[in-house]
Length: 149
Image 1 (cartoon, rainbow, N blue to C red):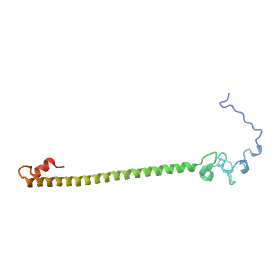
Image 2 (spheres, rainbow, N blue to C red; image 1 turned 135 degrees about the horizontal axis):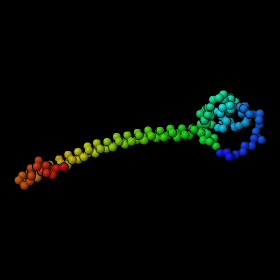
Image 3 (cartoon, rainbow, N blue to C red; image 1 turned 90 degrees about the horizontal axis):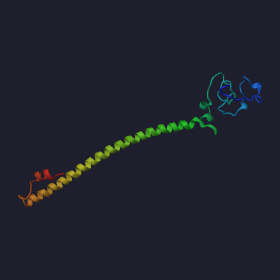
Image 4 (cartoon, helix red, strand yellow; image 1 turned 90 degrees about the vertical axis):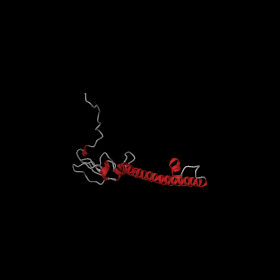
């Protein structure tokens, strides 16, 4: 018993093509079954001489594809989009990092300015209190050490 059991009906085969290149009219141009095979005739009528050059890389049908088989063009475009997205995402991450650093810097500048203004106002009020009644309140440096921001 054979591993694969099948019957091949050879009654409809034309024996005059046995061992010969397949003529142009015997298959559809751009067919992935015959184009580029050893001993086959490609879509422009040239016969291959023992080399294998898949039509996928050297034909428009291989690039764009047909209804039956997709071409490699969409896969290539998808890969290019993926690479572009990777680098775009990396640039966005770098920009987010720069933005975060700048936000921290500006926050610190604003905080320092607000702290200086608050401390200045508190010192002015304490100086005014001391001017009105020098013995009832703490001196300004001691007051700022205790209550300053």
